[in-house]
Amino acid sequence: MSDAALLVACQQGDRVALERLLSQNAPRVYRWAVMLGLAAHDAEDAAQEVLATAARRIATCQSIESLPSWLFQITRRVVSNARRGAWVRRVFRRDDAELEPAFERASGDPEEELAVRRCFRRLSPMHAEVLLLAGVEGYTVPEVAVMLGIPEGTAASRLRLARAAFQRLWEEK
Image (cartoon, rainbow, N blue to C red):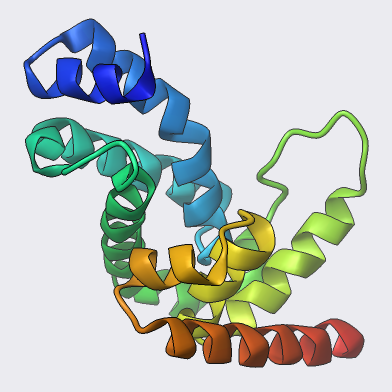
Protein backbone atom coordinates (compact mmCIF):
# COMPACT_ATOMS: atom_id res chain seq x y z
CA MET A 1 0.00 0.00 0.00
CA SER A 2 1.42 3.42 -0.95
CA ASP A 3 1.75 6.11 1.70
CA ALA A 4 -1.04 8.13 0.06
CA ALA A 5 -3.34 5.09 0.08
CA LEU A 6 -2.37 4.49 3.71
CA LEU A 7 -3.47 8.01 4.65
CA VAL A 8 -6.77 7.61 2.79
CA ALA A 9 -7.37 4.31 4.58
CA CYS A 10 -6.70 6.03 7.91
CA GLN A 11 -9.14 8.78 7.06
CA GLN A 12 -11.76 6.17 6.19
CA GLY A 13 -11.45 4.61 9.65
CA ASP A 14 -9.05 1.72 9.00
CA ARG A 15 -7.50 1.19 12.47
CA VAL A 16 -4.75 -1.10 11.16
CA ALA A 17 -3.69 1.54 8.63
CA LEU A 18 -3.79 4.21 11.33
CA GLU A 19 -1.61 2.12 13.64
CA ARG A 20 0.86 1.55 10.79
CA LEU A 21 1.01 5.24 9.84
CA LEU A 22 1.49 6.37 13.43
CA SER A 23 4.09 3.65 14.10
CA GLN A 24 6.07 4.82 11.08
CA ASN A 25 6.09 8.39 12.40
CA ALA A 26 6.53 7.73 16.13
CA PRO A 27 10.37 7.81 16.09
CA ARG A 28 10.36 11.13 14.23
CA VAL A 29 7.85 12.69 16.65
CA TYR A 30 9.89 11.46 19.64
CA ARG A 31 13.11 12.86 18.11
CA TRP A 32 11.42 16.22 17.55
CA ALA A 33 10.19 16.35 21.14
CA VAL A 34 13.66 15.55 22.51
CA MET A 35 15.44 18.03 20.25
CA LEU A 36 12.91 20.74 21.08
CA GLY A 37 14.00 20.50 24.70
CA LEU A 38 12.15 17.75 26.51
CA ALA A 39 13.84 15.16 28.66
CA ALA A 40 13.56 11.58 27.37
CA HIS A 41 10.72 10.59 29.71
CA ASP A 42 8.79 13.80 28.96
CA ALA A 43 9.40 13.32 25.24
CA GLU A 44 7.87 9.85 25.41
CA ASP A 45 4.75 11.31 27.01
CA ALA A 46 4.66 14.16 24.49
CA ALA A 47 5.07 11.79 21.54
CA GLN A 48 2.22 9.68 22.86
CA GLU A 49 0.04 12.79 23.16
CA VAL A 50 0.99 13.91 19.63
CA LEU A 51 0.14 10.52 18.17
CA ALA A 52 -3.16 10.37 20.07
CA THR A 53 -4.06 13.83 18.78
CA ALA A 54 -3.05 12.79 15.27
CA ALA A 55 -5.24 9.69 15.52
CA ARG A 56 -8.25 11.76 16.57
CA ARG A 57 -7.67 14.43 13.90
CA ILE A 58 -6.31 12.38 10.98
CA ALA A 59 -9.22 13.53 8.80
CA THR A 60 -7.80 17.08 8.88
CA CYS A 61 -4.49 16.06 7.30
CA GLN A 62 -4.85 17.16 3.69
CA SER A 63 -2.29 14.95 1.96
CA ILE A 64 0.58 12.56 2.55
CA GLU A 65 2.97 15.34 1.47
CA SER A 66 1.64 17.59 4.22
CA LEU A 67 1.79 14.86 6.89
CA PRO A 68 5.26 15.81 8.25
CA SER A 69 4.25 19.47 8.50
CA TRP A 70 0.94 18.57 10.11
CA LEU A 71 2.64 16.31 12.66
CA PHE A 72 5.31 18.93 13.40
CA GLN A 73 2.65 21.55 14.12
CA ILE A 74 0.99 19.21 16.61
CA THR A 75 4.39 18.34 18.13
CA ARG A 76 5.46 21.95 18.61
CA ARG A 77 2.16 22.76 20.41
CA VAL A 78 2.43 19.71 22.67
CA VAL A 79 6.10 20.40 23.45
CA SER A 80 5.37 24.05 24.17
CA ASN A 81 2.62 23.05 26.60
CA ALA A 82 4.90 20.49 28.24
CA ARG A 83 7.67 23.06 28.71
CA ARG A 84 5.24 25.54 30.22
CA GLY A 85 4.01 22.89 32.64
CA ALA A 86 7.53 21.90 33.65
CA TRP A 87 8.44 25.21 35.27
CA VAL A 88 8.07 23.76 38.76
CA ARG A 89 10.71 21.11 38.06
CA ARG A 90 13.09 23.80 36.81
CA VAL A 91 12.65 25.80 40.01
CA PHE A 92 13.80 22.89 42.15
CA ARG A 93 16.62 21.55 40.02
CA ARG A 94 18.90 22.64 37.23
CA ASP A 95 17.78 22.11 33.61
CA ASP A 96 20.62 19.69 32.89
CA ALA A 97 19.85 17.56 35.95
CA GLU A 98 17.16 15.67 34.02
CA LEU A 99 19.14 15.43 30.80
CA GLU A 100 20.03 11.86 29.97
CA PRO A 101 20.70 10.10 26.68
CA ALA A 102 17.48 9.73 24.73
CA PHE A 103 18.54 7.82 21.65
CA GLU A 104 19.69 4.22 21.33
CA ARG A 105 22.93 3.94 19.40
CA ALA A 106 24.97 0.98 18.32
CA SER A 107 28.00 3.22 18.41
CA GLY A 108 28.61 6.81 19.31
CA ASP A 109 29.22 8.91 22.33
CA PRO A 110 26.18 9.61 24.51
CA GLU A 111 28.04 12.63 25.88
CA GLU A 112 28.08 14.13 22.40
CA GLU A 113 24.30 13.67 22.15
CA LEU A 114 23.88 15.44 25.49
CA ALA A 115 26.19 18.26 24.41
CA VAL A 116 24.18 18.77 21.22
CA ARG A 117 20.92 18.76 23.19
CA ARG A 118 22.33 21.26 25.72
CA CYS A 119 23.17 23.58 22.83
CA PHE A 120 19.68 23.12 21.36
CA ARG A 121 18.14 23.96 24.74
CA ARG A 122 19.97 27.26 24.79
CA LEU A 123 18.70 28.28 21.34
CA SER A 124 15.52 30.30 21.03
CA PRO A 125 12.54 28.11 20.10
CA MET A 126 12.35 29.59 16.59
CA HIS A 127 16.04 28.83 15.99
CA ALA A 128 15.81 25.36 17.51
CA GLU A 129 12.84 24.48 15.29
CA VAL A 130 14.44 25.57 12.05
CA LEU A 131 17.79 23.95 12.89
CA LEU A 132 16.06 20.72 13.89
CA LEU A 133 14.09 20.52 10.66
CA ALA A 134 16.88 21.56 8.28
CA GLY A 135 20.03 20.50 10.11
CA VAL A 136 18.91 17.31 11.82
CA GLU A 137 15.95 16.10 9.75
CA GLY A 138 17.35 17.24 6.40
CA TYR A 139 14.35 19.16 5.10
CA THR A 140 15.07 21.87 2.53
CA VAL A 141 14.52 25.55 3.33
CA PRO A 142 11.29 25.66 1.27
CA GLU A 143 10.01 22.57 3.12
CA VAL A 144 10.95 24.11 6.48
CA ALA A 145 9.13 27.30 5.54
CA VAL A 146 5.96 25.34 4.78
CA MET A 147 6.28 23.26 7.96
CA LEU A 148 6.66 26.35 10.13
CA GLY A 149 4.18 28.48 8.21
CA ILE A 150 6.70 31.23 7.52
CA PRO A 151 8.08 32.83 4.34
CA GLU A 152 10.99 31.04 2.70
CA GLY A 153 13.32 34.01 3.20
CA THR A 154 12.50 34.05 6.90
CA ALA A 155 13.25 30.34 7.14
CA ALA A 156 16.60 30.83 5.38
CA SER A 157 17.50 33.76 7.63
CA ARG A 158 16.53 31.88 10.81
CA LEU A 159 18.53 28.86 9.67
CA ARG A 160 21.62 30.99 9.08
CA LEU A 161 21.26 32.64 12.50
CA ALA A 162 20.51 29.29 14.18
CA ARG A 163 23.63 27.69 12.71
CA ALA A 164 25.75 30.62 13.88
CA ALA A 165 24.23 30.55 17.37
CA PHE A 166 24.66 26.79 17.63
CA GLN A 167 28.30 27.07 16.53
CA ARG A 168 28.96 29.70 19.23
CA LEU A 169 27.31 27.53 21.87
CA TRP A 170 29.20 24.45 20.69
CA GLU A 171 32.53 26.27 20.97
CA GLU A 172 31.63 27.42 24.51
CA LYS A 173 30.86 23.90 25.77
